[in-house]
Amino acid sequence: MTNAISGAGLEGLAGLGLALLLGLLVGVQRGWSLRNEAAGSRFAGVRTFALFGLAGGMAAVTTAPAIAATISGAAAILILIGYAKSARAPDQLSGTTSLAALITLGCGYLAASGQPEMAAVIAVAMTMALALRGELHRWVAGLSDVEVGAIVRFALIALAILPLLPDQRFGPYDAWNPRQLWMVVVFVSGFSFLGYIAAKRFGASRGTLVMAATGAMVSSTAVTAALAMRVRDGEESEAMAIAGIGAASAVMLIRAAILTAALAPAAMPGFAFIAAPAALVSGGAIFFALRSRRDVGASDRPVELKNPFRLAPAIGLMLLVMLLTVAARWTMALVGERGLALVIALSGLADVDSAIIAVGSLPQGLLKGQLATTVIVAPVLANTLFKGATAVAIAGWRKGWKLALPLVLSVAASLTLVPILLF
Image 1 (cartoon, one colour):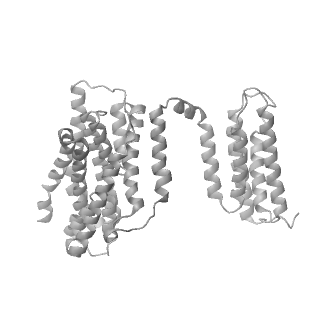
Image 2: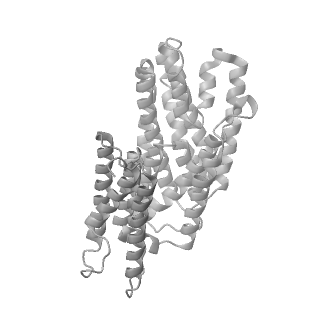
Image 3: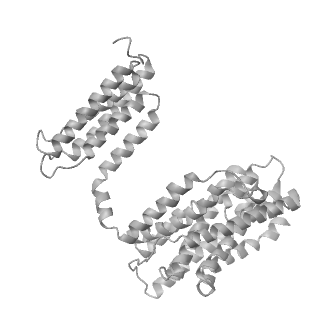
């Protein structure tokens, strides 16, 4: 037996210790959750779950396959016996505790077999899911058929289709990456649904601003497209959409400033000088939009979406990005480094971050002073105009021009300072 057990060193002992601790973690949650059950009605509590974790760890560190199979098999049989016993009790048909015990056994095995991070993530995620039982049940009970369908469709495009797409370039000038292009669809449709959920949770006004501000940390373009869809379908007031687009634009400018400071610090003073007017206009748009909403006596209304998950506009934006990406690559092939600012501006139409990262990855010293600032500012302003065009294209001219106006004004305000910077 002594020769059969390996891991006498610190690594093996640490793995066994982690297996025991993860079992204790799950056991504490299950013990607390079932604390009101009658004595003797539970087949597993704090100590038993800790031992399940330890049993998995022992099965992992042993070098004898027969011993490993005996330990894990006996533990699994014990779990099945416990489930069979509890299932015979009236109103007690639940496999949660038994399944948690099996997963704890597996976590113990992972913890002691050289995969402690994976074991910890699984155990903590499982404990969180178990602890949120009440909240999850209330959330599911409040879902409608439309919302369940939207969740399933979003899971299909984000969790099933996206991982299957190749992460490599093809097409004219190798301009298209299927996985990156599909991310546009995921973002736009995801933010549309996020806006729906935020509005239900926080109310129409606060929900829109929460969605816009948080979503813009990933893609302000996708946020703008999602808000334009809601305005087009009469599901969002124009004032709140303007406030949300202004918030998304402001967050985008802050994000761009952080990236510039980190990747191209030489361009940061000039960028801040040019971007400040755009940020002020965005803030002004938020203020006046919210004020006009209060002046007309608007109130938070229930969100009534017929379809919170719209795929067609997201695919349309993806096709536009494909076209613009080819145009940027074609321009690069045509003018080379002489038109670097134009090339990066075009490439940043739909993704400012990638344009700034591209500038940061250029050879040190290639861009200096005013040229560096120009190359950084160009994609930011181009992206802002692109968002305005996106809003008009999705919402239609009658409604879309109001959404685009603050974006156009912010670009105009920044452009007034360009001559000062250059001369």
